[in-house]
Every structure is written in C-alpha cells, then in structure tokens.
Length: 480
Image 1: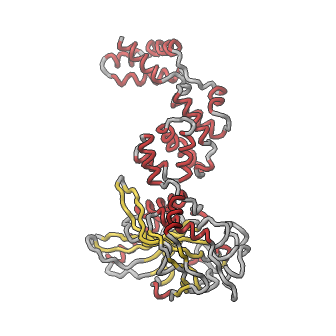
Image 2: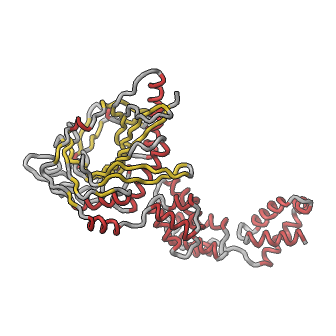
Image 3: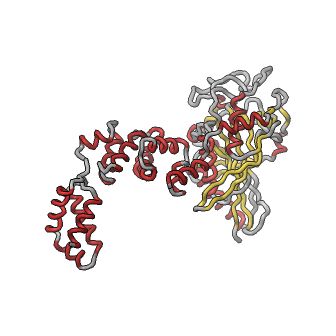
C-alpha cells in the first residue's frame, strides 16, 4: 500500500521588541543566564502583567501580510501545563479568540504555485530554555533552566495540514521567514531561536481523505533539520504501518547527530491544557480603522516585489524569486541597480559569484565585503566595455579583499579591456598564422573551430581583448 504524508507546521517567531510581552525586562539574546528576569516573568505571587502594545501591532501586521482576517476582539488565555522552563505552570497564550485567522500564502514547488492555508496566528509568551549537560534531553544527566527567554513575545503561526513533502514544508517556512523579515517584526535568526517550528506529520493511504495518527516534532530551528526530520519521520511511520503496527500519537525530538527522531512523551490534546481566560489581562479591541492603518503601513511584500521585478526589469520568474527570497537580498539588488547597473547583469552577478563567495564563507549578504554600490560600479565598467565579463571575475575576486573602487582596481592591475581594432587585429593575424590546422578545419566547414582561435587570441591578450571584436575580426578574415 502507498501512503501520502500530511504535514502541518506551527511556526514560532520571536518578535523584535526591546522588552518582553508582559513586563519591562530586556529581550536581548546572549545575556548571562537568568539576568533578564523580574517578578512578573518569573511568575512570583502578587504581580500583574501588562500587554506590550508593540507586540499587538506586530501580530496584526503579520496577520495582514499573510492574508488573515484580523479579529476585532481577541483575548489571552492560560494554557496550563507543568514543565521546568515554565515558572508560572501556565503559558499566557491565546486559544479560542486569537488575533488573526484564516490566512494563506503561496509557495513555488517545481515551477508550480501551491497555496498553504493558515489556521490562525496568535500571540503568546516564550518559555525559558533548558540547558542540558549532554547533546539533547535524552542523553543528559542534568538540565538547568535559563529564564531569560521566559516572557519574550512570540507569535505562533499555525498552518492547515496542506503540505505533503519535506520540500513543500521547507518552501512554506522559507516564505513565512521572508514575509516576517519584509515587515520587520522578527530578526528570524534561526540559530538564536528567533524562528523555529513544531512539525506535525501523519500518513494516510493514497486516495483517502481521513487523517492518520500524527506525531509532533518540537523546536526545529534549521531548514536542513526541518527536511531531514520530516523525511525520517515519513520513513519511520511507513515502516510501522507496513509491519502491521499503529502509529502512536506522541511528541518526538529530532537528534541531528544520529539523524533520527526519539520519543519524548504522549501528545496532549487541547483539553489536556485546561485553557481558561486570562483574568489579569483585558481583551484586545482593534477597530477597522486601526486595522486599515496597519495595512497601509506594510511595505511591498515578496510576491508583489517579485512581480514588479519581472515586469519592470524583465527578470525571469526564477531570478526574481531568488532575488526577493529575503528582504536583505532584495534591498541589495535595489541598491545595485540604483547605481545605473543593468538589472539582468546585477541579478546574474548576485546569484553566481556573489552567492558563491557568501556561501563559501558562511555569511549573509548584509555582511558582504563587496557592497552593493561597488558591485554596481563594476557592472557599469562591463556595460561601458572598460572590462570584459571574464576580466570582471578577476576584478570581483580582488574586490572581495580589497576595499578600493573597482575602477581603481582595474587601473592598478592593468585590466582595462583592449578595444583598439589595430591592436586586436595584430594578435588575430598572428593567431591565424600560428594555427593553420584550426584555420583549415574552419574553412572546411567546421565552424566550431573558430572557438579555439578565439581562445588563443584571448590567451595572448591576457583576457583583455574585447571578445565581440575578436569574433568579428576572426570571422571577417577567415571568410574573406
């Protein structure tokens, strides 16, 4: 029997506020353990929380950017459970009346658009962080708790189970990350836990609609782990079902070192949390006028920006998709073409040499040693025929470690392209004289033989001859 995977994600995103959701403690990452705490976020008796208005604003913007309906009336609830990283023994979250519901985003899978529905977006406080003595909770002898993260504001973005592969789940999470970066509500630094996902996976026989028993994998904080964990879990559940067993509804943890999921505990249902309205916080009332004002404040979002780049600059759908996949990359591209650089050349250089160097050093585009303005200046040198595309690769490589303007690098290194017809003609004549076999092959009908001659001219000119002029002169002399 063949099975189909059914996947839903619960994405947790920390919001980039200066203070926590219900108190004035700092949200700064990396502080000494248990220093950003107070009686409110530690849940000490007799304290009262107050809602951080910025959190509500960011949650509404996230809802609008993902095509959700914003509820005029929403409230906070107490989600009751006991865990060491939860000092109050309940998490202040939202249950039946969240801030936003019924949204969607579109993802691209193998050139096809797929819509993933959002069930809801709700606000909540983050829990503390367990600091294990081992590599994970399963192999640790002891675990300590750092409460600095307790009370850091979160939005939880809950999808419908609309995805059926690890590839789709990754594309969906990448899209959510891009949107949150564009609207500037989260830093989305996955290595710092700003963005992480709980993954729900179940299997059902192909052609059926009834959902199977699901398992949940908690706190996945990299795209690679997301894909690997889903693929493993699909394989594990398939083996269980094919052996005549039953999948157990449970929470599992991903062990990246071993490449497997491990059972943690049985999976709770909503009624197990004994949700109750939060008595210490008033409901959130949002008017239509306020919602419209937030909508108008949104920047150009990834899909709209992608469509604009295709229309205004003639970029392919693929190129425009890569350029707009992150706000930083899109802004870098805008800065490059603001110098007067050709848009298609800018896209090509960003996706080839720039991307290759960034990946090799493991840095993102915001830390690129080749600033957008300098890349634009280099592209303009190509457009003016000052340098060829081949020479430009040498210039770019030099720019990576040399802060000088590309024009100065070209001058200092003697890389100015030869465009003098007589100078190129002299090299062409010598190459024709020195390569009678290639000339004979070309005149005998093998037109590809001209490539070897072009290569020789470029070699003797040290790559500085204008390639177009070389081709034209060779063709003229060989066909004359």
